[in-house]
Amino acid sequence: MKPMTNQTIDQNEDALTFEQAMQQLEQIVSQLESGEQTLQETLALYQRGQALVQYCSQLLDQAELTIRNLSDEKT
Image (cartoon, rainbow, N blue to C red; front, side, top):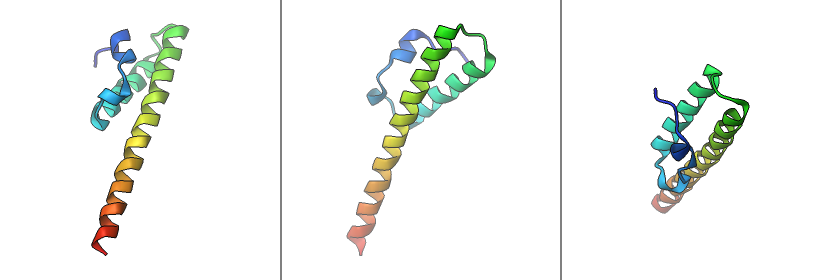
């Protein structure tokens, strides 16, 4: 797995699909587990990871709401 670059880290979440965001999270976890980054790089990766977790959570909440609305329409 290739390391995330600053360009990848700075990518706006809104441009990502859920699957892309999860893939980036997996990359971040791998990088953090390797312990090969400086403290500053580690903090940047952690912050990016937190932003991606929040974004994924919002997408899941939206999907759940959509499913509930569709289920309510059937009844």
